[in-house]
Image 1 (spheres, helix red, strand yellow):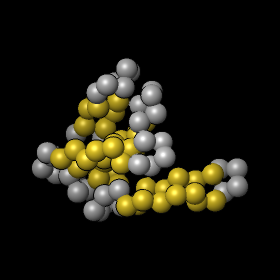
Image 2 (tube, rainbow, N blue to C red):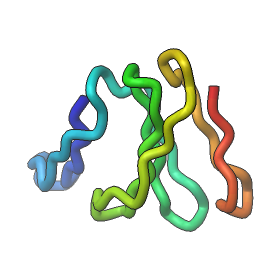
Image 3 (tube, rainbow, N blue to C red):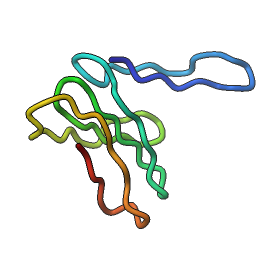
Length: 79
């Protein structure tokens, strides 16, 4: 799946990156601006606001359908 950043004022796509081998299932943002995307490739990817991948987390045995950040942004819970 492709992750895209859009400028809503000009309605133009600014950036596009391949985030997952398959569909993106969920995207969430922590309070400090870190993005987490989940996919049908059984993984979670963590991104900066500029869509630079910080890390890829694997370990799920099926599609990752949800992810949420803790209030302090230190933890993500997924399922």
